[in-house]
Length: 57
Image (cartoon, rainbow, N blue to C red; front, side, top):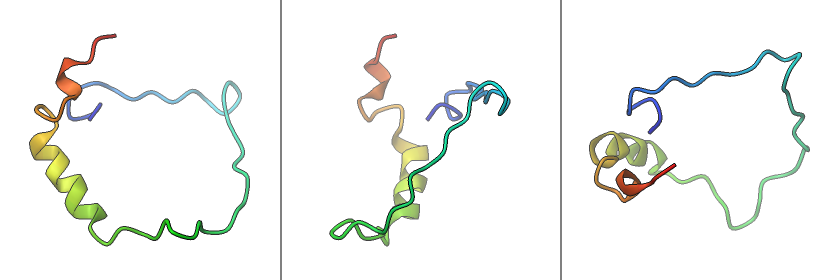
């Protein structure tokens, strides 16, 4: 959504900000969604009407 709105995502250099993930096994009951890519494609069409358009910063 950020990129679709024309905004830039900037990432600081590793010397400024980085993190390390805690290793874990897959969560039971949280299987990979077989429709995940369809959802991403749909977002490109619907993101301006999905409720995020009224968000204020």
